[in-house]
Image (cartoon, rainbow, N blue to C red; front, top):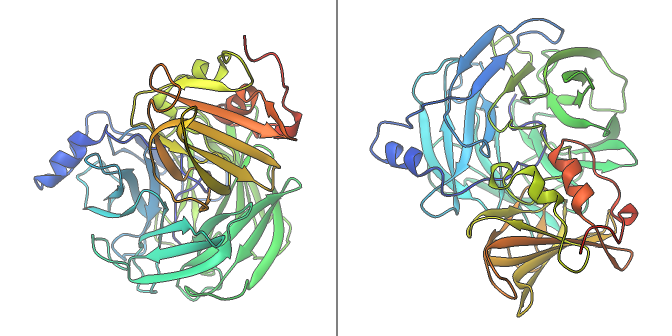
Length: 438
């Protein structure tokens, strides 16, 4: 019951370098020192109501990814976060808390590559949630790497499963056997398409169904009715800044078993079993909630805190594109699912072309200082693909970002601003070809 990193199935951008103080403190065995901790509000019911558990924990950058899970096997999900290691930006640092309070971090360790998406789950059925990562493989299949202890070390379970095209990976206990296993969510025609697998090994899709609308919604999942099986849900942003939660109790194209409003959309949605009663319920956090979470299936190309909103709106100098000023070494992320082609030339410098067959568009990134992904790799929204820089034809450190659809360059500003504001962006083919450059 386990995740869960929620809101979007892909993480928001991560700002390497700002965690030096956290890593230094943890290195000396005192755990991270927090000054202005994130707020967490947890609700014990799938209905409107108050906040049963409210506390501050985690003075972490807004770009870190919130987690929830049962880290000690006591039946209660608690909070955590995963962030890139400051010293190299290549490993994930995991911070896990065993109580609903602002006490010291109970588990801190480094594990997994930041070139992959982080997850948590109970991979062996022992009641404890532990880390995992999933990476897009060159063969168009997701590569799953699972760790069965909350500590650094090797990979305990590794396998390939699920196509990367137009889908992103999730994990959950889909059949009630107490083991979390892979799944995919694929948006199509305004609906979430769920593809769920019951084994941590290659195999077929055991459950395939469509459920939940994508408009202004992010998919969530949990054991809503206490029968040990995790099933779909939706967290949708309402115009009055409330979250509206929809939940289904079966892994099928079923109706909605529960519909209620709870929590502010100025905070990120969470799911977990906060009181060990066997049911997943809702929560929110201010961690990574500086603005609305990106809509499901999309990510900003940079950490939210790396550039103000105005940088995404600025005109380009001579053709449809946008230049976003950021310091060298800022992580850059896949905005959608797709396949990458590495670029290294005198104009773009080091860069990436991310091709999305589902959207019929190519997304171009230029002037990286280094790549973080291999040529031909499949990626998910929010997956690290490189670090910004000043290579190629560039007059200063920045990210050049462009969109090409229908064979022509398109103005990316309105597309990026929609994601920044938490809205589903327009189809790339509908974007204008003029009015965004001088």
